[in-house]
Length: 528
Image (cartoon, rainbow, N blue to C red; front, top):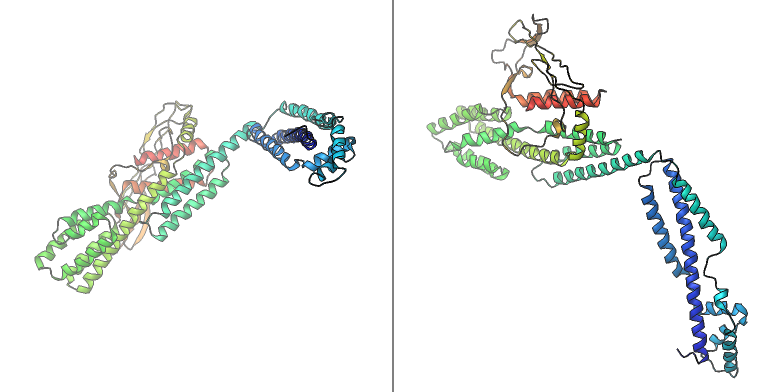
Protein backbone atom coordinates (compact mmCIF):
# COMPACT_ATOMS: atom_id res chain seq x y z
CA UNK A 1 0.00 0.00 0.00
CA UNK A 2 1.46 3.33 -1.13
CA UNK A 3 0.73 5.95 1.51
CA UNK A 4 1.98 8.69 -0.81
CA UNK A 5 -1.06 8.23 -3.00
CA UNK A 6 -4.43 9.65 -1.82
CA UNK A 7 -6.36 6.36 -1.96
CA UNK A 8 -3.51 4.53 -0.20
CA UNK A 9 -3.65 7.05 2.64
CA UNK A 10 -7.46 6.88 2.87
CA UNK A 11 -7.47 3.03 2.93
CA UNK A 12 -4.81 2.97 5.64
CA UNK A 13 -6.81 5.28 7.91
CA UNK A 14 -10.03 3.33 7.23
CA UNK A 15 -8.34 0.03 8.17
CA UNK A 16 -6.94 1.47 11.40
CA UNK A 17 -10.31 2.91 12.35
CA UNK A 18 -12.09 -0.39 11.52
CA UNK A 19 -9.71 -2.39 13.72
CA UNK A 20 -10.35 -0.01 16.60
CA UNK A 21 -14.10 -0.35 16.09
CA UNK A 22 -13.84 -4.18 16.15
CA UNK A 23 -11.79 -4.06 19.36
CA UNK A 24 -14.34 -1.73 20.93
CA UNK A 25 -17.23 -4.06 19.97
CA UNK A 26 -15.32 -7.07 21.35
CA UNK A 27 -14.72 -5.41 24.72
CA UNK A 28 -18.35 -4.30 24.88
CA UNK A 29 -19.72 -7.76 24.09
CA UNK A 30 -17.35 -9.50 26.50
CA UNK A 31 -18.38 -7.11 29.26
CA UNK A 32 -22.03 -7.73 28.49
CA UNK A 33 -21.34 -11.48 28.52
CA UNK A 34 -19.64 -11.16 31.89
CA UNK A 35 -22.72 -9.39 33.24
CA UNK A 36 -24.92 -12.18 31.90
CA UNK A 37 -22.68 -14.88 33.39
CA UNK A 38 -22.66 -13.17 36.79
CA UNK A 39 -26.44 -12.82 36.70
CA UNK A 40 -26.76 -16.52 35.82
CA UNK A 41 -24.42 -17.41 38.69
CA UNK A 42 -26.49 -15.38 41.15
CA UNK A 43 -29.69 -17.08 39.98
CA UNK A 44 -28.12 -20.55 40.24
CA UNK A 45 -26.74 -19.78 43.69
CA UNK A 46 -30.14 -18.66 44.96
CA UNK A 47 -31.87 -21.65 43.36
CA UNK A 48 -29.38 -24.02 44.99
CA UNK A 49 -30.64 -22.75 48.37
CA UNK A 50 -34.21 -23.66 47.38
CA UNK A 51 -33.76 -26.86 45.37
CA UNK A 52 -30.88 -29.38 45.41
CA UNK A 53 -28.38 -28.58 42.63
CA UNK A 54 -25.27 -30.75 42.49
CA UNK A 55 -21.95 -28.91 41.96
CA UNK A 56 -23.61 -25.60 41.25
CA UNK A 57 -20.27 -23.88 40.63
CA UNK A 58 -19.33 -26.37 37.92
CA UNK A 59 -22.73 -25.84 36.35
CA UNK A 60 -22.21 -22.09 36.51
CA UNK A 61 -18.75 -22.52 34.99
CA UNK A 62 -20.22 -24.31 31.98
CA UNK A 63 -22.90 -21.64 31.65
CA UNK A 64 -20.35 -18.83 31.96
CA UNK A 65 -18.05 -20.42 29.37
CA UNK A 66 -20.98 -20.76 27.00
CA UNK A 67 -21.98 -17.12 27.46
CA UNK A 68 -18.38 -15.97 26.96
CA UNK A 69 -18.07 -17.99 23.76
CA UNK A 70 -21.33 -16.57 22.44
CA UNK A 71 -20.20 -13.03 23.24
CA UNK A 72 -17.05 -13.56 21.17
CA UNK A 73 -18.92 -15.12 18.29
CA UNK A 74 -21.43 -12.29 18.29
CA UNK A 75 -18.63 -9.87 17.33
CA UNK A 76 -18.75 -11.29 13.82
CA UNK A 77 -22.35 -10.15 13.55
CA UNK A 78 -21.29 -6.54 14.09
CA UNK A 79 -18.21 -6.31 11.84
CA UNK A 80 -18.41 -2.91 10.08
CA UNK A 81 -18.18 -2.56 6.30
CA UNK A 82 -15.68 -0.18 4.66
CA UNK A 83 -18.37 2.34 3.71
CA UNK A 84 -19.77 2.23 7.26
CA UNK A 85 -16.34 3.17 8.63
CA UNK A 86 -16.12 5.96 6.04
CA UNK A 87 -19.48 7.39 7.14
CA UNK A 88 -18.34 7.20 10.77
CA UNK A 89 -15.21 9.20 9.97
CA UNK A 90 -17.28 11.71 8.00
CA UNK A 91 -19.41 12.20 11.12
CA UNK A 92 -16.30 13.50 12.88
CA UNK A 93 -16.44 16.73 10.80
CA UNK A 94 -15.28 15.57 7.37
CA UNK A 95 -18.71 16.28 5.85
CA UNK A 96 -18.93 13.19 3.59
CA UNK A 97 -15.50 13.72 2.05
CA UNK A 98 -14.38 10.12 2.72
CA UNK A 99 -17.51 8.39 1.41
CA UNK A 100 -17.54 10.63 -1.69
CA UNK A 101 -13.89 9.83 -2.39
CA UNK A 102 -14.67 6.11 -2.24
CA UNK A 103 -17.59 6.50 -4.64
CA UNK A 104 -15.40 8.36 -7.16
CA UNK A 105 -12.55 5.82 -6.94
CA UNK A 106 -13.39 4.18 -10.28
CA UNK A 107 -14.71 7.29 -12.00
CA UNK A 108 -13.00 10.15 -13.82
CA UNK A 109 -13.91 13.65 -12.71
CA UNK A 110 -12.30 17.03 -12.99
CA UNK A 111 -12.95 17.57 -9.29
CA UNK A 112 -11.60 14.14 -8.18
CA UNK A 113 -7.97 15.20 -7.62
CA UNK A 114 -8.99 18.31 -5.72
CA UNK A 115 -11.41 16.26 -3.56
CA UNK A 116 -8.78 13.64 -2.75
CA UNK A 117 -6.22 16.26 -1.74
CA UNK A 118 -8.77 17.96 0.48
CA UNK A 119 -9.88 14.63 2.05
CA UNK A 120 -6.32 13.54 2.85
CA UNK A 121 -5.49 16.89 4.43
CA UNK A 122 -8.63 16.77 6.60
CA UNK A 123 -7.99 13.14 7.67
CA UNK A 124 -4.72 14.25 9.23
CA UNK A 125 -6.62 16.67 11.45
CA UNK A 126 -9.18 14.10 12.74
CA UNK A 127 -8.22 12.17 15.93
CA UNK A 128 -10.44 9.07 15.46
CA UNK A 129 -8.72 7.36 18.40
CA UNK A 130 -10.25 9.90 20.71
CA UNK A 131 -13.67 9.58 19.11
CA UNK A 132 -13.77 5.73 18.99
CA UNK A 133 -13.69 4.68 22.67
CA UNK A 134 -12.34 1.23 23.57
CA UNK A 135 -13.83 0.93 27.05
CA UNK A 136 -17.55 0.13 27.38
CA UNK A 137 -19.87 2.83 28.66
CA UNK A 138 -20.00 3.60 32.37
CA UNK A 139 -23.41 1.98 32.94
CA UNK A 140 -22.14 -1.36 31.69
CA UNK A 141 -19.03 -1.14 33.86
CA UNK A 142 -21.16 -0.23 36.88
CA UNK A 143 -23.35 -3.26 36.21
CA UNK A 144 -20.26 -5.51 36.21
CA UNK A 145 -19.13 -4.15 39.58
CA UNK A 146 -22.60 -4.50 41.13
CA UNK A 147 -23.14 -8.04 39.85
CA UNK A 148 -19.67 -9.11 41.02
CA UNK A 149 -20.42 -7.92 44.55
CA UNK A 150 -23.84 -9.58 44.49
CA UNK A 151 -22.34 -12.86 43.29
CA UNK A 152 -19.75 -12.77 46.06
CA UNK A 153 -22.50 -12.20 48.62
CA UNK A 154 -24.52 -15.20 47.40
CA UNK A 155 -21.43 -17.41 47.61
CA UNK A 156 -21.18 -16.63 51.33
CA UNK A 157 -24.78 -17.74 52.00
CA UNK A 158 -25.20 -21.09 53.82
CA UNK A 159 -25.91 -24.16 51.67
CA UNK A 160 -28.44 -26.34 53.54
CA UNK A 161 -29.19 -28.55 50.51
CA UNK A 162 -25.60 -29.35 49.57
CA UNK A 163 -25.64 -32.89 51.02
CA UNK A 164 -29.08 -33.62 49.58
CA UNK A 165 -27.87 -32.53 46.15
CA UNK A 166 -24.89 -34.86 46.43
CA UNK A 167 -27.10 -37.79 47.41
CA UNK A 168 -29.53 -37.08 44.57
CA UNK A 169 -26.65 -37.00 42.10
CA UNK A 170 -25.26 -40.30 43.38
CA UNK A 171 -28.73 -41.86 43.18
CA UNK A 172 -29.25 -40.68 39.61
CA UNK A 173 -25.81 -41.93 38.62
CA UNK A 174 -26.48 -45.29 40.26
CA UNK A 175 -29.88 -45.61 38.60
CA UNK A 176 -28.31 -44.91 35.21
CA UNK A 177 -25.72 -47.62 35.83
CA UNK A 178 -28.40 -50.12 36.80
CA UNK A 179 -30.51 -49.13 33.80
CA UNK A 180 -27.55 -49.93 31.56
CA UNK A 181 -27.31 -53.34 33.22
CA UNK A 182 -31.00 -53.99 32.57
CA UNK A 183 -30.65 -52.91 28.94
CA UNK A 184 -27.64 -55.21 28.58
CA UNK A 185 -29.69 -58.08 29.99
CA UNK A 186 -32.50 -57.25 27.55
CA UNK A 187 -30.10 -57.45 24.61
CA UNK A 188 -28.80 -60.80 25.86
CA UNK A 189 -32.35 -62.14 26.04
CA UNK A 190 -33.32 -60.82 22.60
CA UNK A 191 -30.36 -62.43 20.85
CA UNK A 192 -30.70 -65.75 22.71
CA UNK A 193 -31.84 -68.19 20.02
CA UNK A 194 -32.41 -70.98 22.53
CA UNK A 195 -35.42 -69.28 24.11
CA UNK A 196 -38.97 -69.53 22.86
CA UNK A 197 -40.97 -66.39 22.08
CA UNK A 198 -43.02 -66.92 25.23
CA UNK A 199 -39.89 -67.23 27.39
CA UNK A 200 -38.37 -64.12 25.82
CA UNK A 201 -41.55 -62.13 26.39
CA UNK A 202 -41.73 -63.26 30.01
CA UNK A 203 -38.13 -62.22 30.70
CA UNK A 204 -38.40 -58.93 28.81
CA UNK A 205 -41.59 -58.04 30.69
CA UNK A 206 -39.81 -58.65 33.99
CA UNK A 207 -36.86 -56.50 32.92
CA UNK A 208 -39.15 -53.70 31.75
CA UNK A 209 -40.96 -53.78 35.09
CA UNK A 210 -37.57 -53.55 36.80
CA UNK A 211 -36.68 -50.42 34.81
CA UNK A 212 -39.90 -48.79 35.98
CA UNK A 213 -39.14 -49.70 39.60
CA UNK A 214 -35.63 -48.30 39.28
CA UNK A 215 -37.06 -45.09 37.88
CA UNK A 216 -39.35 -44.72 40.89
CA UNK A 217 -36.76 -45.65 43.54
CA UNK A 218 -35.98 -42.89 46.00
CA UNK A 219 -32.59 -44.14 47.20
CA UNK A 220 -29.91 -46.67 46.33
CA UNK A 221 -31.31 -49.13 48.85
CA UNK A 222 -34.67 -49.13 47.07
CA UNK A 223 -32.90 -49.55 43.73
CA UNK A 224 -30.90 -52.49 45.09
CA UNK A 225 -34.06 -53.98 46.56
CA UNK A 226 -35.73 -53.85 43.14
CA UNK A 227 -32.70 -55.55 41.57
CA UNK A 228 -32.56 -58.13 44.33
CA UNK A 229 -36.28 -58.80 44.08
CA UNK A 230 -36.06 -59.55 40.37
CA UNK A 231 -32.87 -61.57 40.80
CA UNK A 232 -34.70 -63.65 43.42
CA UNK A 233 -37.58 -64.24 41.03
CA UNK A 234 -35.15 -65.27 38.32
CA UNK A 235 -33.40 -67.64 40.70
CA UNK A 236 -36.70 -69.25 41.66
CA UNK A 237 -37.45 -69.89 37.98
CA UNK A 238 -34.19 -71.78 37.54
CA UNK A 239 -34.99 -75.49 37.52
CA UNK A 240 -31.87 -77.64 37.46
CA UNK A 241 -33.88 -80.87 37.83
CA UNK A 242 -34.78 -81.18 34.15
CA UNK A 243 -31.24 -80.36 33.11
CA UNK A 244 -29.84 -83.07 35.38
CA UNK A 245 -32.52 -85.53 34.25
CA UNK A 246 -31.65 -84.90 30.62
CA UNK A 247 -28.03 -85.75 31.37
CA UNK A 248 -29.02 -88.90 33.28
CA UNK A 249 -31.32 -89.98 30.44
CA UNK A 250 -28.51 -89.65 27.89
CA UNK A 251 -26.17 -91.69 30.10
CA UNK A 252 -28.72 -94.48 30.61
CA UNK A 253 -29.65 -94.66 26.92
CA UNK A 254 -25.98 -94.77 25.92
CA UNK A 255 -25.78 -98.24 27.47
CA UNK A 256 -28.32 -99.62 25.02
CA UNK A 257 -27.23 -100.40 21.48
CA UNK A 258 -30.56 -99.34 19.96
CA UNK A 259 -30.59 -95.97 21.73
CA UNK A 260 -26.91 -95.02 21.43
CA UNK A 261 -27.52 -92.66 18.51
CA UNK A 262 -30.35 -90.99 20.44
CA UNK A 263 -28.09 -90.67 23.48
CA UNK A 264 -25.48 -88.91 21.35
CA UNK A 265 -28.10 -86.53 20.02
CA UNK A 266 -29.26 -85.76 23.57
CA UNK A 267 -25.69 -84.95 24.58
CA UNK A 268 -25.36 -82.60 21.59
CA UNK A 269 -28.49 -80.74 22.79
CA UNK A 270 -29.44 -79.96 19.18
CA UNK A 271 -33.21 -80.01 18.77
CA UNK A 272 -33.20 -80.93 15.08
CA UNK A 273 -30.78 -83.81 15.59
CA UNK A 274 -32.78 -85.10 18.55
CA UNK A 275 -36.01 -85.01 16.54
CA UNK A 276 -34.34 -86.89 13.72
CA UNK A 277 -33.12 -89.64 16.06
CA UNK A 278 -36.58 -90.03 17.60
CA UNK A 279 -37.96 -90.63 14.10
CA UNK A 280 -35.21 -93.20 13.52
CA UNK A 281 -36.15 -94.82 16.83
CA UNK A 282 -39.69 -95.38 15.57
CA UNK A 283 -38.32 -97.33 12.62
CA UNK A 284 -35.93 -99.31 14.80
CA UNK A 285 -38.71 -100.31 17.20
CA UNK A 286 -40.69 -101.82 14.32
CA UNK A 287 -37.93 -104.29 13.44
CA UNK A 288 -36.78 -105.16 16.96
CA UNK A 289 -36.69 -108.74 18.13
CA UNK A 290 -38.39 -109.73 21.36
CA UNK A 291 -35.06 -109.89 23.19
CA UNK A 292 -34.05 -106.43 21.94
CA UNK A 293 -37.41 -105.02 23.00
CA UNK A 294 -37.02 -106.48 26.48
CA UNK A 295 -33.52 -105.06 26.74
CA UNK A 296 -34.76 -101.65 25.55
CA UNK A 297 -37.70 -101.71 27.99
CA UNK A 298 -35.28 -102.53 30.80
CA UNK A 299 -33.17 -99.53 29.79
CA UNK A 300 -36.27 -97.31 29.77
CA UNK A 301 -37.26 -98.56 33.23
CA UNK A 302 -33.81 -97.87 34.69
CA UNK A 303 -33.75 -94.45 33.08
CA UNK A 304 -37.19 -93.61 34.50
CA UNK A 305 -36.09 -94.65 37.99
CA UNK A 306 -33.10 -92.27 37.82
CA UNK A 307 -35.18 -89.23 36.89
CA UNK A 308 -36.94 -86.73 39.11
CA UNK A 309 -38.97 -84.91 36.47
CA UNK A 310 -42.45 -86.42 36.31
CA UNK A 311 -43.01 -85.54 32.63
CA UNK A 312 -39.89 -87.34 31.40
CA UNK A 313 -40.51 -90.24 33.77
CA UNK A 314 -44.13 -90.62 32.64
CA UNK A 315 -43.06 -90.46 28.99
CA UNK A 316 -40.49 -93.23 29.49
CA UNK A 317 -42.96 -95.40 31.40
CA UNK A 318 -45.57 -94.73 28.74
CA UNK A 319 -43.22 -95.85 25.99
CA UNK A 320 -42.46 -99.03 27.93
CA UNK A 321 -46.17 -99.73 28.32
CA UNK A 322 -46.78 -99.12 24.62
CA UNK A 323 -44.04 -101.61 23.75
CA UNK A 324 -45.74 -104.18 25.97
CA UNK A 325 -49.04 -103.65 24.17
CA UNK A 326 -47.47 -104.11 20.75
CA UNK A 327 -49.65 -101.32 19.32
CA UNK A 328 -47.56 -99.49 16.71
CA UNK A 329 -49.66 -96.32 16.87
CA UNK A 330 -49.36 -96.24 20.65
CA UNK A 331 -45.59 -96.71 20.38
CA UNK A 332 -45.25 -93.83 17.88
CA UNK A 333 -47.37 -91.55 20.05
CA UNK A 334 -45.28 -92.45 23.09
CA UNK A 335 -42.08 -91.67 21.19
CA UNK A 336 -43.51 -88.29 20.14
CA UNK A 337 -44.51 -87.60 23.74
CA UNK A 338 -41.01 -88.43 24.93
CA UNK A 339 -39.59 -86.15 22.23
CA UNK A 340 -41.81 -83.34 23.50
CA UNK A 341 -40.72 -83.92 27.10
CA UNK A 342 -37.06 -83.83 26.03
CA UNK A 343 -37.63 -80.58 24.12
CA UNK A 344 -39.25 -79.09 27.23
CA UNK A 345 -36.20 -80.05 29.26
CA UNK A 346 -33.88 -78.51 26.66
CA UNK A 347 -35.99 -75.37 26.66
CA UNK A 348 -35.76 -75.21 30.44
CA UNK A 349 -31.98 -75.59 30.27
CA UNK A 350 -31.76 -72.70 27.82
CA UNK A 351 -34.04 -70.75 30.13
CA UNK A 352 -31.75 -71.58 33.07
CA UNK A 353 -28.75 -70.23 31.16
CA UNK A 354 -30.63 -67.06 30.23
CA UNK A 355 -31.80 -66.58 33.82
CA UNK A 356 -28.28 -67.10 35.16
CA UNK A 357 -26.90 -64.60 32.65
CA UNK A 358 -29.57 -62.07 33.58
CA UNK A 359 -28.80 -62.62 37.26
CA UNK A 360 -25.13 -61.98 36.62
CA UNK A 361 -25.87 -58.84 34.60
CA UNK A 362 -28.12 -57.46 37.33
CA UNK A 363 -25.70 -57.87 40.24
CA UNK A 364 -25.59 -54.65 42.34
CA UNK A 365 -22.32 -52.72 42.38
CA UNK A 366 -19.75 -54.43 44.58
CA UNK A 367 -18.92 -51.19 46.43
CA UNK A 368 -22.56 -50.44 47.11
CA UNK A 369 -23.25 -53.98 48.31
CA UNK A 370 -20.15 -53.89 50.51
CA UNK A 371 -21.22 -50.60 52.08
CA UNK A 372 -24.65 -52.01 52.81
CA UNK A 373 -23.09 -55.11 54.31
CA UNK A 374 -20.88 -53.00 56.56
CA UNK A 375 -23.80 -50.84 57.65
CA UNK A 376 -25.85 -53.91 58.45
CA UNK A 377 -23.03 -55.65 60.27
CA UNK A 378 -22.04 -52.89 62.70
CA UNK A 379 -22.65 -53.65 66.35
CA UNK A 380 -23.18 -57.38 65.96
CA UNK A 381 -22.06 -59.50 68.87
CA UNK A 382 -21.33 -63.18 69.14
CA UNK A 383 -24.31 -64.99 70.57
CA UNK A 384 -25.53 -68.49 70.37
CA UNK A 385 -28.96 -69.86 70.89
CA UNK A 386 -30.46 -73.25 70.64
CA UNK A 387 -34.11 -74.13 70.41
CA UNK A 388 -35.75 -77.45 70.15
CA UNK A 389 -39.31 -78.52 69.68
CA UNK A 390 -40.92 -81.88 69.63
CA UNK A 391 -44.30 -83.16 68.65
CA UNK A 392 -45.99 -86.39 67.91
CA UNK A 393 -48.91 -86.87 65.61
CA UNK A 394 -51.49 -89.55 65.77
CA UNK A 395 -52.60 -91.46 62.72
CA UNK A 396 -50.66 -92.60 59.73
CA UNK A 397 -48.87 -89.30 59.23
CA UNK A 398 -45.66 -87.98 60.75
CA UNK A 399 -45.41 -85.51 63.58
CA UNK A 400 -43.63 -82.24 63.09
CA UNK A 401 -42.19 -80.12 65.86
CA UNK A 402 -41.61 -76.39 65.99
CA UNK A 403 -38.90 -74.76 68.02
CA UNK A 404 -37.48 -71.33 68.46
CA UNK A 405 -33.92 -70.28 69.18
CA UNK A 406 -32.89 -67.16 71.01
CA UNK A 407 -29.46 -65.63 71.43
CA UNK A 408 -28.09 -63.00 73.78
CA UNK A 409 -24.84 -61.18 74.22
CA UNK A 410 -24.60 -59.09 71.10
CA UNK A 411 -25.95 -55.63 70.51
CA UNK A 412 -27.47 -56.83 67.28
CA UNK A 413 -28.34 -60.22 65.79
CA UNK A 414 -26.48 -63.27 67.01
CA UNK A 415 -26.21 -66.67 65.47
CA UNK A 416 -28.04 -69.68 66.76
CA UNK A 417 -29.10 -73.14 65.79
CA UNK A 418 -32.37 -74.81 66.46
CA UNK A 419 -34.55 -77.68 65.42
CA UNK A 420 -37.29 -75.27 64.51
CA UNK A 421 -36.69 -71.65 63.71
CA UNK A 422 -33.02 -71.45 64.66
CA UNK A 423 -30.78 -68.43 64.90
CA UNK A 424 -29.06 -66.78 61.98
CA UNK A 425 -25.61 -65.81 60.92
CA UNK A 426 -24.68 -62.13 60.53
CA UNK A 427 -25.51 -60.54 57.24
CA UNK A 428 -22.44 -60.14 55.13
CA UNK A 429 -22.90 -59.15 51.58
CA UNK A 430 -25.89 -59.53 49.29
CA UNK A 431 -28.86 -61.81 49.76
CA UNK A 432 -29.92 -65.14 48.41
CA UNK A 433 -30.97 -63.53 45.18
CA UNK A 434 -27.58 -61.91 44.80
CA UNK A 435 -25.70 -65.18 44.58
CA UNK A 436 -24.07 -65.55 41.22
CA UNK A 437 -24.72 -68.89 39.55
CA UNK A 438 -22.01 -71.44 40.14
CA UNK A 439 -19.84 -72.22 37.16
CA UNK A 440 -18.88 -75.60 38.61
CA UNK A 441 -20.85 -78.74 39.20
CA UNK A 442 -24.35 -78.46 40.60
CA UNK A 443 -24.56 -79.53 44.22
CA UNK A 444 -26.72 -82.60 44.65
CA UNK A 445 -29.23 -82.12 47.45
CA UNK A 446 -30.91 -84.86 49.42
CA UNK A 447 -34.47 -85.48 48.31
CA UNK A 448 -37.23 -84.95 50.86
CA UNK A 449 -40.78 -86.27 50.89
CA UNK A 450 -43.45 -83.65 50.16
CA UNK A 451 -46.85 -84.90 51.35
CA UNK A 452 -48.48 -81.67 50.20
CA UNK A 453 -48.09 -82.99 46.64
CA UNK A 454 -50.35 -86.00 47.11
CA UNK A 455 -51.66 -87.21 43.80
CA UNK A 456 -54.30 -89.65 44.98
CA UNK A 457 -57.89 -89.13 45.96
CA UNK A 458 -59.09 -88.90 49.52
CA UNK A 459 -59.80 -86.59 52.39
CA UNK A 460 -57.04 -84.76 54.19
CA UNK A 461 -57.20 -84.21 57.95
CA UNK A 462 -54.81 -82.63 60.44
CA UNK A 463 -54.28 -84.23 63.86
CA UNK A 464 -52.63 -82.31 66.69
CA UNK A 465 -49.71 -84.09 68.34
CA UNK A 466 -49.09 -84.62 72.03
CA UNK A 467 -45.66 -83.03 72.40
CA UNK A 468 -46.40 -79.65 74.05
CA UNK A 469 -49.37 -79.45 71.71
CA UNK A 470 -46.99 -78.16 69.08
CA UNK A 471 -46.71 -81.15 66.78
CA UNK A 472 -49.19 -81.88 64.05
CA UNK A 473 -49.71 -84.61 61.52
CA UNK A 474 -51.35 -84.46 58.11
CA UNK A 475 -53.18 -87.64 57.14
CA UNK A 476 -54.84 -88.54 53.87
CA UNK A 477 -57.47 -91.29 53.79
CA UNK A 478 -58.30 -92.88 50.46
CA UNK A 479 -59.89 -96.04 49.14
CA UNK A 480 -57.71 -96.05 46.03
CA UNK A 481 -54.98 -98.62 46.45
CA UNK A 482 -52.91 -97.06 43.65
CA UNK A 483 -53.03 -93.55 45.08
CA UNK A 484 -49.77 -91.61 45.01
CA UNK A 485 -48.56 -90.86 48.53
CA UNK A 486 -46.55 -87.87 47.41
CA UNK A 487 -43.19 -87.41 45.78
CA UNK A 488 -39.55 -86.91 46.61
CA UNK A 489 -38.18 -83.50 45.69
CA UNK A 490 -34.67 -82.05 45.99
CA UNK A 491 -34.20 -80.29 49.31
CA UNK A 492 -33.18 -77.01 47.64
CA UNK A 493 -36.44 -76.82 45.68
CA UNK A 494 -38.54 -77.26 48.80
CA UNK A 495 -36.51 -74.63 50.67
CA UNK A 496 -36.76 -72.35 47.64
CA UNK A 497 -40.56 -72.44 47.80
CA UNK A 498 -40.55 -71.54 51.49
CA UNK A 499 -38.01 -68.81 50.75
CA UNK A 500 -40.20 -67.37 47.99
CA UNK A 501 -43.20 -67.14 50.31
CA UNK A 502 -41.09 -65.55 53.02
CA UNK A 503 -39.68 -62.94 50.62
CA UNK A 504 -43.15 -62.08 49.29
CA UNK A 505 -44.45 -61.72 52.84
CA UNK A 506 -41.48 -59.51 53.73
CA UNK A 507 -42.10 -57.26 50.71
CA UNK A 508 -45.64 -56.66 51.92
CA UNK A 509 -44.61 -55.97 55.52
CA UNK A 510 -42.93 -53.02 57.19
CA UNK A 511 -39.90 -54.38 58.99
CA UNK A 512 -36.50 -52.78 59.78
CA UNK A 513 -33.89 -52.98 57.08
CA UNK A 514 -31.51 -54.90 59.33
CA UNK A 515 -34.09 -57.62 59.89
CA UNK A 516 -34.56 -57.96 56.12
CA UNK A 517 -30.88 -58.80 55.79
CA UNK A 518 -31.08 -61.35 58.61
CA UNK A 519 -34.10 -63.09 57.08
CA UNK A 520 -32.48 -63.25 53.64
CA UNK A 521 -29.27 -64.66 55.07
CA UNK A 522 -31.20 -67.25 57.09
CA UNK A 523 -32.85 -68.70 53.99
CA UNK A 524 -29.54 -68.47 52.14
CA UNK A 525 -27.92 -70.59 54.86
CA UNK A 526 -30.60 -73.25 54.40
CA UNK A 527 -29.50 -73.71 50.80
CA UNK A 528 -25.77 -73.91 51.52
